[in-house]
Every structure is written in structure tokens, then in C-alpha cells.
Amino acid sequence: MPVGYGKKIREAVMESRKKAHSRYTCPSCSRLSVKRQSHGVWECGKCHSKFASGAYEFGR
Ligand SMILES: [Zn+2]
Image (cartoon, rainbow, N blue to C red; front, top):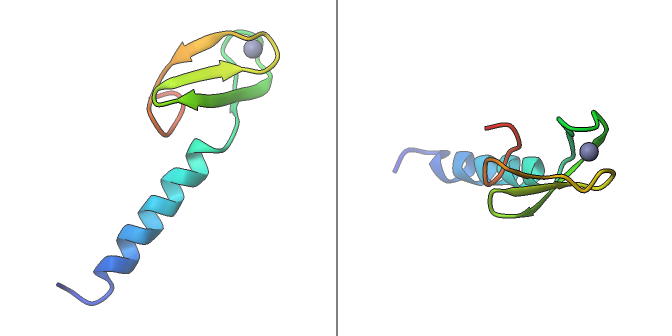
């Protein structure tokens, strides 16, 4: 295993966790209130619209 391999994996995991917990702009009401509900399900906290999207990142 190359030196630093494990560290890169950890950073990638942390990066995807950060994205999973960040908010995204709602395509419906344009407010920054879309949060992940579960794998691939995102919900806007303002207009309560639900969207199917990427498991860790909205818009994919
Ligand atoms: Zn909304």
C-alpha cells in the first residue's frame, strides 16, 4: 500500500460527510434550506418539497 493511501481515503470520507450535512438551494423556492433526509432523499425546510438526488450530495 502506498504511503498516504489511508489518509486520502479518510479525507474523501470526511469530504462526503461534510457535503451530506450541508444545505443546498431549493429548486422550488430558491432558499438555502434543502437538507438530506436519508440516502438519496432531500427535503426543503421551507416549502417541504422532497427531491430524489445523490446519496451524499444534492444535484447529482
Ligand atoms: Zn423550498
